[in-house]
Image (cartoon, rainbow, N blue to C red):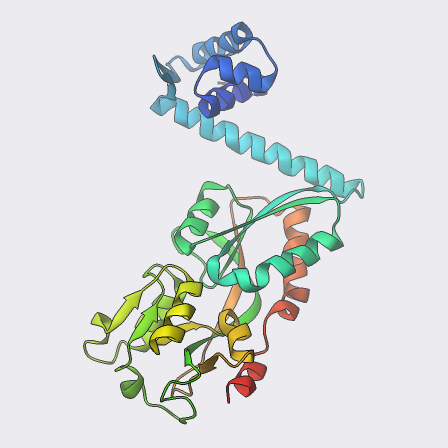
Length: 311
């Protein structure tokens, strides 16, 4: 494969994305015969078909997937090289895609906006999804940095702490337990909890916290995808939720929700900026992680202030 060219690899990537030679040619600004020739040349070099030709489109073969993976690696490394060259020239520009779990959305946007203001020539995209989708994006290299409460263990990553958060039990202001001190775990376990889905970090720590209470894992629980839906539910139903303190900061300060004084809570956790170890630490990623470590705490709610508001 030593004679293949990057132009041929770009044609392959375009065919994969567009599904047809005509679409790939249009995307590349080439003629269809030119793209067909490049595909024939790289298949001749490989010695095996790289795409299955079907009436409804072209689909990579197993060998094609291997070549496409290498093409993406090369494309990514060249993009990193461009950023490195820009840094050597003193030009602060480039693109970074940041993924964040939904719990982070309460402070991620102003934090990322502050970074963008400090680096006005940077093209920055923020993608907020559930933990499973965010980790999968990091695995597939469609994001550069992930903001997570737990670094993934499925593949090798760098993880830099940029702040702390607290996990708390919260209820409506009118719940009978509001104002009680040192509520036992056994007593709070009898409450109806509104919980995040099982793959969320918040849910993992709730299950750990309640693990010593027999049968607690089976309820009474109601699972919900959205933190906002959970907050509405406990306001309407007078149940209890287990959430990150910063996600209820506005409602606690407004006097709508209250943080319950439960023995063993809050659970203090860290926020991590996570990137893959097999990716080069580009100047832009390094600048973003440095910004988070030095400035990130400014965007996190003060838990002491929340406790005071909840009292």
